[in-house]
Length: 253
Image (cartoon, rainbow, N blue to C red; front, side):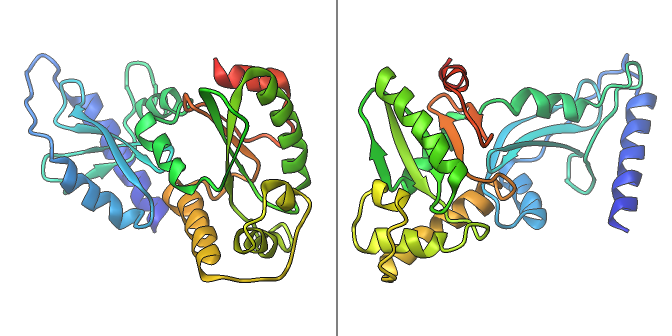
């Protein structure tokens, strides 16, 4: 039923673009951002929502809404009173999907406004320097350990600070318990790498880990991105299991 509804909406959107007389000037009073957020919340109640741009679409009686669900760029098209929402619009002349074009262009960089929010979830900082990267990792993750070894060597040579965010993943057995022990016993990141586990628990440690998991997976909508994740201060990011110094050089360009 939901797929049928989306296809129906898409068909209407194509028809609207195809039938619009572009010689006649159309003026649209686009809805306010707070009203748009209310609509998005109905579909994604847990995600952090950032409205990036609201503007009339060409000379049509539609408004284009560019926004982000967490770090993910998204777009839809609405009428003035938000009673209709179209997930996509096709340019009849070229056959181009205007929504996908916008998303692909914006998918390369995380905006600074969103990037700054990651600072609240940093647990450890390694190295010194004016430049920095975020390293999202967890315990019992062999890919993460290999990636960190390459990252640390490169960062030391290039004076890049590493801001470490601990995000335990269920796929890594005992990852949460190890991270909790490290936090509660005030141990170092090296202790986490060495799988330190005193089996100790504390409320502050659980709050820290649970809020980080919630932030990464729900608010930033990164639930399908496994560790490790490396994000540069410019907003470029890597999600591959094996990284090279060339990858890191690209990240900072």
